[in-house]
Every structure is written in C-alpha cells, then in structure tokens.
Image (cartoon, one colour):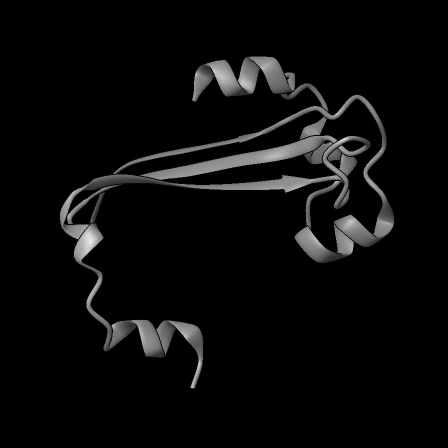
Amino acid sequence: MELAERAEHESFDVLEDDIVVLDTETTGLSFKKCSLIEISAAKLSGREIVERFQTFVDPGCSIPEEITTLTSITDEDVKGAPSAKEAVAAL
C-alpha cells in the first residue's frame, strides 16, 4: 500500500490546526556544499489548502544532470529566478 493510501485511513489530529508544509529542492544532498533550486509551501487550515507558494531559486551554478533527472528542474528553469535570500524573504 502506498503512503498516500495509508494516510487516507489515518487520523492526523495536528491537521486540525493551521500548519505550513514546506518542500525544497537542492543541487545535492550536502547542506554545506549544495544550493536551493526551488522552494514550495502550502498553508493548510484543517485539511484544506488555503494558500500556496512556489518559486525557483537561482543557485548561482549549473544544476547537476542527476538532479535534473530527479527533479525535472533545469538550468533554464532557474535562469533569472530570485536568489536564495530573496526567495526565503518572499516566503
């Protein structure tokens, strides 16, 4: 059974409060050496999404091929995107 199917049958009491779910994509796994390439967030009130945020982030370097394969995010996608500092401030 997939995670989404299992979640349908679980009780998530915390979801009755307002929460923000945050997702990031980076150029690799090292927080010291790698850079953000995307920030996404969803604000939930109960189980309803009430607000969304998404932006690509210019990492200041080329995105490794294996990361593009994994995320489908290309150098062209992040070209002209905000810096990490600007993206976090916008969030």
